Length: 145
Image 1 (cartoon, helix red, strand yellow):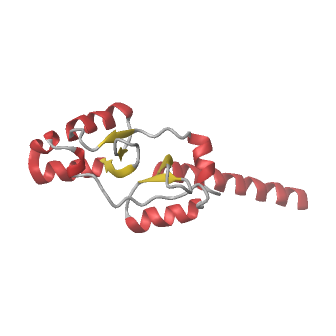
Image 2 (cartoon, helix red, strand yellow):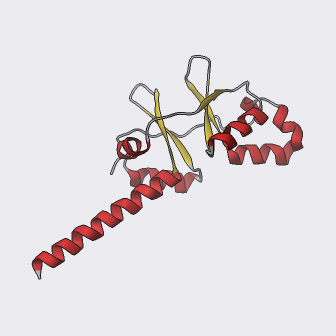
Image 3 (spheres, helix red, strand yellow):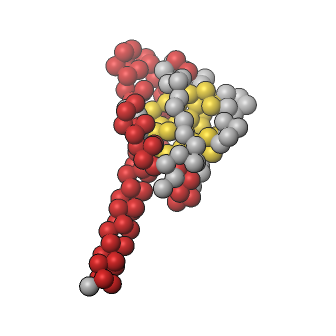
């Protein structure tokens, strides 16, 4: 199964902010939208980073509550791993596990953002796939018996 399947099911909404937004404002957005990461874009809309709950916690641990007044670009992850819609769910799971992150922006051939996938999306897709495979095997065994 490919990443395109996940986006078909969950949608392509991308919550994005600019890097000069404060960490406090970004944290409130994460909480209000009940999401674990937000895409950071430049004024032209290009991907410049990603800010996750983990980045917020690290910032507060390093600088205390004052970190919430600093801009997002001071703490965001700049080296953002991305995937494409053609990547498989297995490839995406491998990358997320190996590199230890839970959110991956999806880009097209022109490197334009087309969505974002979380580990929860990946797990849900794998469970659905496993259930379908089990049902297919049961049907096959029933028909053969």
